Structures are given as C-alpha cells and as structure tokens.
Image (cartoon, rainbow, N blue to C red; front, side, top):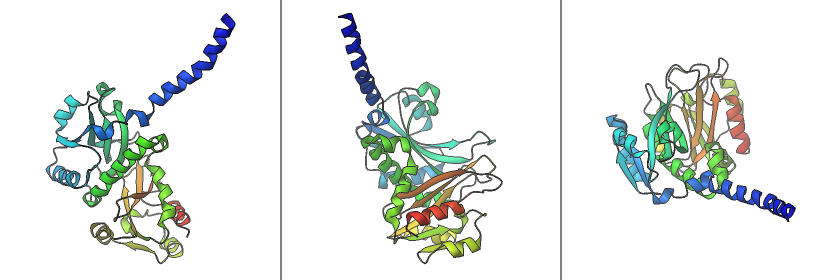
Length: 283
C-alpha cells in the first residue's frame, strides 16, 4: 500500500506543479488589466505632460484611466488595484547616465518595495533620448499608446506574446508587401552607404528628411510604414539603438529590433536591418 501511495503521489505531483505554473504565468497575472484603473503618471514636465494627457484622452480605449503625480504613484504602487503607465529613464551598464526615455506599463502590488524594477512589467517601449529629444516622440506618441494597448491585450490571450516581447511584431512584415516604406534619413546608420541603398531600395521605398517622414504620420498616410529610431543623444559603445517601423493608418508596429552600439555599428537601421526588412517584404 505504501508503495502504491508513492506511485500515486509521483503521478499527481507534475499535475499540481503544472497547475501552479499556469497560475503564475504573465497571462494570468495581467488577466484583470481591462477591469482595473490605469494610472497615467505625469512627469512634472509641462509640455510633455500636456501632450501625454491629450493623447491618452484621444487614444486610450482598453481600460479606465486616471492621471496622477509621481508623489501619488509612490503611495499607490503598493496596491494591485492599479496599473501604471509611467515614463522612465533607462541606463545600461556601460552608460554613465540614463540615455533613453521609455514608456512602460507596470502592475502595482508585489515587489513595490523594490521600486519600479520590482513591479511586474507588462510592456516597455523606447520613446526618445533622455537628453535633447528631437520632438518626433510627440508625432509618434499616439502610435506608442496604441502599441502598448495592443500588446497588452495580446499578452492576456497568449503567453507567447507576453514573454517574446515587442520584437514579435516583426512577424507583421510579410503583410507589408506592397506598402510604401519611408525612412527618415536620420534613422539610417552612418555605416550604410549610398551605394548600398541604391542597390537595395526599390521604388516603394523612400529616404527623406525628418520633417517629410513625420508628415506621413501626421497625415495618416494609408498603406505606408514610417521609420522611427531611439538611441542616446551622444551614443557610446555599450548603449543600445532601437529601430521601429510603424503604420500611420493603424498605428501598428511592423518592425522592432535593437542592437548594441559599437565602434563599428552606430545608431539607426543597419545594413542587416534593411536586408532583413526587404526579405520579409519579398524584395
């Protein structure tokens, strides 16, 4: 009998462990997102806060939301009644100071005593360099909000989305065949030569200046993808460069990758990015 009980225990333990693992997945942890209030944390920077409030009012659709100050966030972060959309500055190991601002969605509650890093991160997207941002982040802010919401809803449905991250959106590129591709010339790394571009860019691809590229976003051009990159204002080896392609019509993310900046590879889209994008688009 004792031996039989040991065998039964051995059989049911994996089932119990499996049930516990399922309960603790990210999908389960954020399953209440649409029912809870999202607190949008204001930074104290007047112009940015005004733009954030306007764009949240115009674009946030998946959960109730309220605005709060940083001081209020510090008091409320211990409660799992709230999610927080907060702007933070990120610093990587080899950087002397924070180089990039991120817009991140986190859940309050467990881990709050450890600060923001102790809370459950739902999704984080880079939006601008911490010092001397160009202002393009305001053009793309509606898209950032849409990307955060779409990603969170997808992560509530499948753990694959929740754990793979925004890079999973690169899978959208096969659907971009026939779409016009707009690169802001400042988004292309200096290691990419004009000769390479002449050979590898087709008639559906345009390299233009920053203002003209942003006009495609502002005018909500259909059937179009527009480039956006984020890296520190003075990038150093060890910093990261983030590269995105966004559709103005739907505010959907079609491409998202990052690379570590080095002496060989500067900020922006590299030759390997352009080749990869072309291959996904059937070029």
